[in-house]
Image 1 (cartoon, chains in turn red, green, yellow, orange):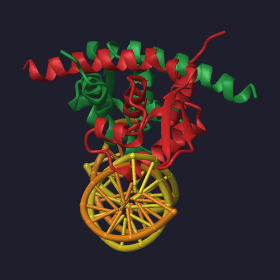
Image 2: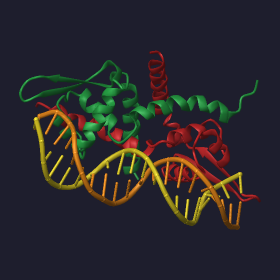
Image 3: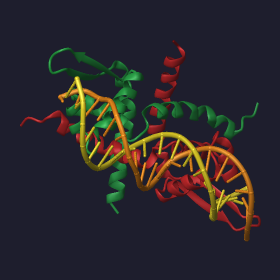
Image 4: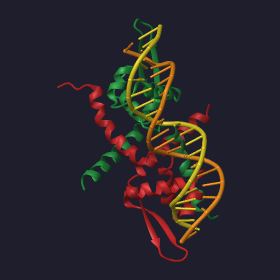
Length: 114
Length: 114
DNA sequence: CAGAATCCTTCGCGATACTG
DNA sequence: CAGTATCGCGAAGGATTCTG
């Protein structure tokens, strides 16, 4: 049985779409990288990501928590203390991040190199 | 010398940002996948990607060509024939695509599985 | 400190129709 | 076939201020 390419490639696209639906956008991966490298507090994360605003960060953190890509813990002290930590699920993104990083470094070299 | 995490992780973020600047968005990777799996003609690519419109496809193809991620060739026949083909540079994205695909498949399993 | 509230601008993207 | 033209919405994102 013969398969047509434009049918066949759909099955390759769907999981990529699924992944992009969750992690695409300007900030999500950067936030995961920041938290994965040890930043826990809201302002700490905010300062670690150039140009992000508190509004956007708050919204993205909410999204990521819903997708179980980070964990939010409130310590009921005064003043209130909130910590964001990675989850095992966000660890599973390391391959994606590594691939993007590698490609990005190469891309930068290509752009600058000419 | 001691390094702070929120300083250190910046260097990890920049290449990821670079990569996302080029390939993020709803359609770019899907288009590359389509062309990489053999679709060459405008309408062929359009049909292979559910829900994309000709306007958006035209714009994205232009972007991708500027970044040398695809090649546009015009055969001067009548009616005019245009072909889009992958470049060696777009081939370098296969690792990224593979990582995203793998993660997306796993994510779908996780979502459906509960 | 950890956000929420408000206002505003830009942009991605869709729908529809049209051209050489 | 390979696009372009026009219109427009809704969401993303920015700037600033405010609160417990």
